[in-house]
Image 1 (cartoon, rainbow over the protein chains, first blue to last red):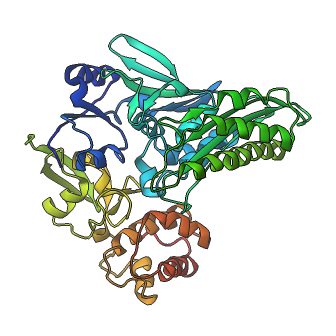
Image 2: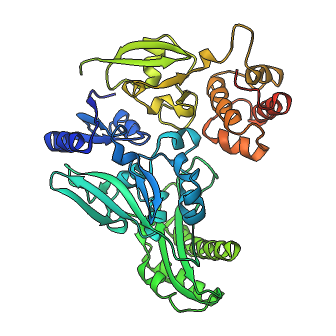
Length: 290
Length: 162
């Protein structure tokens, strides 16, 4: 592996100072399950590895009015958390299929987001849940909506002297739930051919959509918020016709490539299938929960 | 070359100190600096699980962890699984079921299965298969491994902490 320096930062200010000093040469280390492999395989040049797992703020995991997930909290702590299981099930869906248990012991949702893979499983789940990303840098703190966080494969809204601190997710409404799924040839240890998530709020009688948020993975350079497909469901009856209309609108924004995992045509078809299943999955969870 | 870093850690219950470069993975440290060659290098990218060790009670791919990250941690490797009294029940069942052929994947399977049985003493077959999805075996076809793990739960229940 290429040589680099390593510092285990103890505070946010220490981490930001190191980023400010080393800029593009520095990289934040959290779970390392992407970063260490990228450095070993020379896909990324790093002169200074800043390990933030000793920084208190990035280890927070609390549900008190809103859900706060520190940037370094590993997947297994997220899918084992009772508040997340009850209120944010799409996050459980996504984090329990990222790698195997060895990966889930270390890989964080914050790292999954900062790695900015178009096929990242947790990002559509974060998008549908209305997540805000809290970022820290030399000028203090700022917040970025998660759908605006990724700029392209491996590219994010972070400046080279900024780091992701935590993700803040609002409490869902009473008749609401969420669902994420993906298509992969193998159930585990695979990368999404297409991923789709849906968060749905229904009327008290479960007959009408109050609102919906749909997001897609692996069909564009970044995970996508399907804005039109989401907003057209508001006020519509809960029916196969409404859902089909949303699926078609979701397919309209997919611009997938053909590669070893699937062709563009297959991926576009899968957007329709998975959007329908994600919406129905969320709806069923609402009905089961009442 | 970066300067070597002094790391203090605990491996298989013993305090251990070592020097390593930041670029050395935990797997490289175990194998090349500490002569603990039980953890194997398979894919070196987090897919095969042959390098699985237990860090703070959780299974981890040691190829995807830096040696410097071991500072202050409690680590278990396959070398610490058997006791002077005998094999760990999982090791015994792997032998009885012939759940190995070439043996390269075996330390990783044992370490990962050990954590499974410590956190979920009576898993279903589906739970065992899902938990072990991050360990690849190119010899056995997996069935014998799954049977060995399930047999460990049936015969020893919760007493798998050896």
